[in-house]
Image (cartoon, rainbow, N blue to C red; front, side):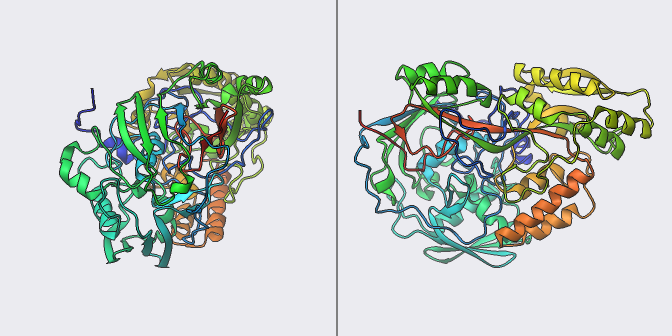
Length: 586
């Protein structure tokens, strides 16, 4: 049976798909809670360079487990920490297949459920993007290291801070034969902005209109000075263009049981929320690098992934970072290989700075001093070195807080509480997500905070309700949560911590914080933009307006015959299936 379109909760789109606090397990980025670990050493397998970029096609959310539920629906961006509108070298179209590649082999993927439907405009979960990208490709791609590179767009520029120009790849057709051109891109963006149930409309609010300059040139006229981050926006679902002919012909049913794009694979079939199947597109512009006969997405799993790989049932799986010991053991036995990589997902103690006692900077500073981050982070994620000192990923060039500004010091925390008017300690009620991963995490922090004078009473909130309680009803003052993060760090900072951020119910931001972000978004120079992000993160932590604890890692586990996996991915990120992945002949 196939998904039948029903009214989608538009509220899910408004949160930009950034904070992912739902029910899940440990390190994933779907629209649910996150649990991640920062970068970890690759013991029995190489460790991909940690990065600040999205996992694959551009929509990677953070979530705590392979089966965490959706809570924040639309994405804002999915790209690296501030790439400029000057693309780096594109994949080589003339690449020939490696001699050991089995071009008849299909890759069987475990890690995330199939999208309910395949329309990138209406998809609610950002975790659907990696699978969607196989059919649609993407205007702006990214490397495993997070650099933005040409995809269906070959060149881009920003003549000024409110104008963005995109040059498209010539000679490309959709799977139904419709030409891929500027009119198709304009039709997609116009529909994404105007469709009543679009989950992309918040992302594209900055776009005033789209002008077709010529057959292969599109100009985006912006109503805000944000040209610098347009490549990041088009590195997500906003950059996945469906055939306008197919959309017109199928109307409201488009995406229910069909998808027509210009991507490296052709849609075959799917069972909503379960499995999906795509086949190689021999006419793709980069056909020389499409080395799999097809991909079978076999759904999510929370256990026995490695056993299924060892038994030959599955070729590739993403797993929670807490499963690293299992991956190491299997790799030591020669049964699998793995990659683990730091991601933009991070866990934190959410506090509403507009209410007592969190409106007092001394209390916020005391909270930060009360957490032994290296110990807490490794306990939560299982990955050494996963502690977080700020919301931006530790390896990002935009990182502004490289060292802990609040070293673990229970005595200092108690002193700060006394100065704040709480000489006998402070009682707090803190929400936790009703899920084993999060209740374990919260209990450990509860004990740690007690040593510093914080008497924490925990209460549970169902994972599917946590975002609504935090950001819509705004009824929670403190909670152990996790945040997806964005490839473009400024979007993480804006959504979560700016005075108008969708997930900052306090409305409080450091002085000058919003101005730094506004200046950065208009800047087309990636290095300058990263420097501004770094200043903003430092200002945030100077005011102790965030209490970060850990960053998650993505863990990819695969058969030794699988080649070309770029890095470790979370179960929401799934993988970058636009990379030249192949299965070696036996």
